[in-house]
Length: 296
Figure 1 (cartoon, rainbow, N blue to C red):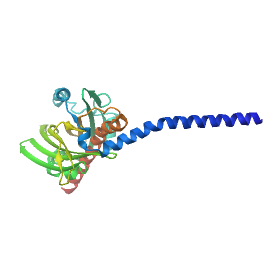
Figure 2 (figure 1 turned 180 degrees about the vertical axis):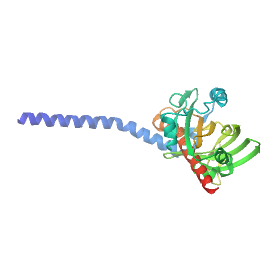
Figure 3 (figure 1 turned 90 degrees about the vertical axis):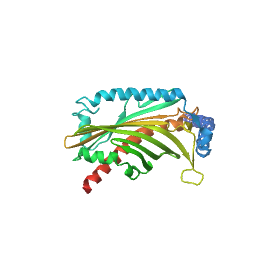
Figure 4 (figure 1 turned 60 degrees about the vertical axis):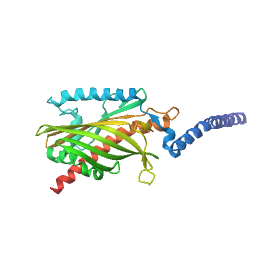
């Protein structure tokens, strides 16, 4: 009996020693990761600057061109939206759910020198009319209010017909990492008929802003920053039916690749931000449309 107890406790001690050994051995790696995290957060932005390569930009342009070629066909088809007009997903939308899913693969495409995030979201706004939704979509002067805190400033540079050239300052935040960016957009709206419309837009310039709101505020050279957002394009589709308006948004963005040894930090940030942004923007769009309808 005594020997059995001695054997049992010696095994426990052995297990504890093994656990202690594994923890002690992994401690340097854990500390190294924590140190790297805070070095990245606290170091000057320029310390982690990376260049947007011409071939990376060209691969993004090719991806966008392929999307636009497919959408050109959909714009003329009866099946206007990617969400079926019947079935489980349609019922979820009409029940108030915002559906967000990768447009291709897992939503994250690795390319030479960067990553392309491609996500699509959809929602349904009951009792809304096409005019209600387009009013909000085109009222860029109010977008800083509608989409706060993600967008902090908006200015319409030019407006001719259904074409808008717009400046936006927006903030991307995740954990303790915050990025302030100034972007110039070229956005077009097209109305197929009274019940269907769409818009497409791309950034023509994106720069990272250092010390935003301070006397020392300044822009980094375009394509020579931390690379948390280099380029973006968006495709909105609107269809009025079933007593309301369906809204669908495909958001495509180009970011840097994950820095060597920083996968644990950058991976979740770069992969989760696009889906969160799509869901949040659609929700704020719906809220703005509902408020507009209630004030008519």
